[in-house]
Image (cartoon, rainbow, N blue to C red; front, side):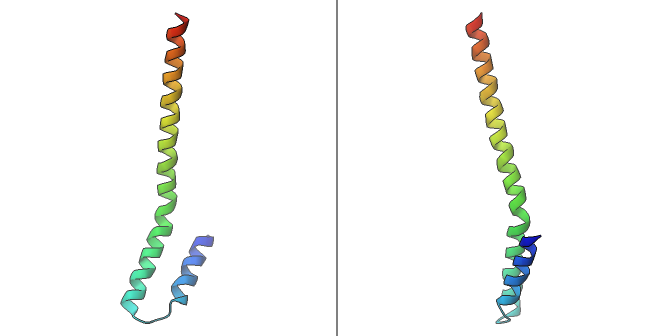
Length: 67
């Protein structure tokens, strides 16, 4: 929610030099704010997969050593 207010503040603070330029900049800021949580989620999923793969490999190695 804070991000939305920040976007709105930045959007209005830029002024109206060129409406098309301002709208384009606003869209880019909104896009960055909206996609950031998804990028974070994808990164977390990748990290979790790596951790699971490492644990699986360690478990398989321990099972081989016990035989």
